[in-house]
Image (cartoon, rainbow, N blue to C red):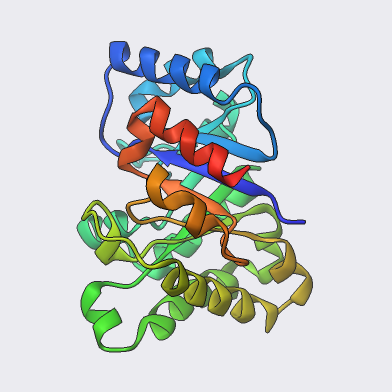
Length: 250
């Protein structure tokens, strides 16, 4: 049985006071139910606070990015080993904003993915298509190429200790959401593509949906057979909404 996971991506949001209230609300809000792994991915400056607030809770935590390099003259970068040393469990890799805004290629994403896994972190690998790519009917080609770049570089077995997230770029922060069936179709395709390399790995890897996930649509999305939870953006900044989404996955 695949692990149900809900991961919150705060993106470039937060403050010490606001984070404290948010984290306390999440810890209280998820008490009383089980069956879902809840993860918080925060900006680098707040990881110490997240570590301290979640230390005695079942909530896991991680970062939103990492360097593909482990050490050296890379000013401003943070390595996988540093995150692991600090106690992080997860790290987001290949988010569409990293690809589009910061020019991360599929090769860079693959290098970051392997660096995370080699350090013992759980990479949350994001794939997804733009609106023009969906309208052109090439969604499967795009997400397939993004996935293959990682598998070819790191090996399919690396997915045993990873999470995959399908995030249609046109549904991130826009209020638009893929219908449950649209999301399921891509999730099924991704699982089948992994199965062409290893049926065992395909049957075990959790594939999350990300793209304007909120309490009102989470239950219907998570009911799909190949959707194992969500990567949540805006709704992860409100404890009540994030906890409702976690509950929908439980």
